[in-house]
Length: 336
Ligand code: EPU
Image (cartoon, rainbow, N blue to C red; front, side):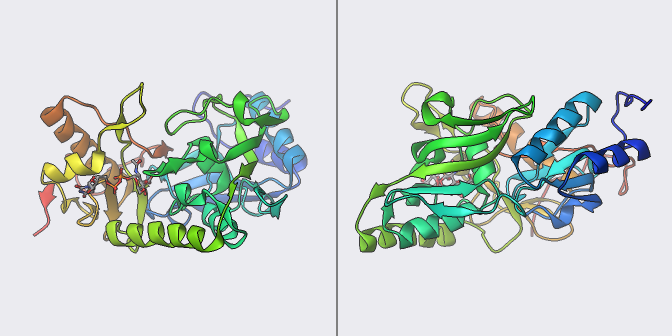
């Protein structure tokens, strides 16, 4: 009889073997998340699993539920901070087997969760489908972008979705119409444990040249206003929106900039000089440095505006077991 996991999850040898016997896709163990996140911080994940198909993912989720194996999706690692002690459990990687993209007709594209969103934008542009500029510049994959209803100042994923495919927290494989998904600002309202496996996008038919102009224009704007060439995890904070109109009431980047915080560092983590809502890894930053800087910004904005900014990032995993560089909390200093 297999031992039940202790409250703090640990991968026993038996559990690893049971997992190997249950799933078809690839399993990798002790994977450093530094190499799988765009900001390049984070300790090892116990296991990364690339499900072979939806049925395989369903089998995994049912097993995870039974044995209380924590799991999450790694995606492109573009909006993700894994703490320095790593992640106990399984991170799902949908890129290897959910990477297909198909043109359904003149207005619709079907894409697997592991397709990079920029690929969808490029294809839409090539096929003269209008609207993709709304999500242009988002570096994530389709699955993560749906799950967080990723967006830009021009719009968000929910405006382009016709339906999504999921495996729910019980392992049920489902297709949901847009109306049945409770999209909100940076959320798709599903229970924790739900995994998006694909989406069908619906665009407007448009003029190829005009579409190319819009997409290229928003790409260029981002290049000029965001620190895209330095490791980062995308915008650190959500903008504060008016709940009724949905309009931005307080722009996180603007207020952080106005507080004079650009360039402030906690060791290798720095508030970008280019866009104040980005934290960049300028050296050997750890997750601890990045999160200390995030907290510092949140405190400063709270003191100045009485508003607690909410982060856009997913932060997972546990702290490193011991403090490596001194016991006190890191001093914040302005980079000279
Ligand atoms: N601003 C400053 N200083 C700065 C940065 C911005 O004053 O350092 C001002 C800008 O001048 C502008 C306002 O703040 O008046 C808003 O800035 P921006 O146009 O860059 O848009 P944003 O709201 O900061 C949003 C998304 C970005 C997306 C851009 C471009 C959020 C939280 N962020 O940024 O998404 O790329 O629009 O459309 O919604 C992300 O999700 O990771 C992300 C970066």
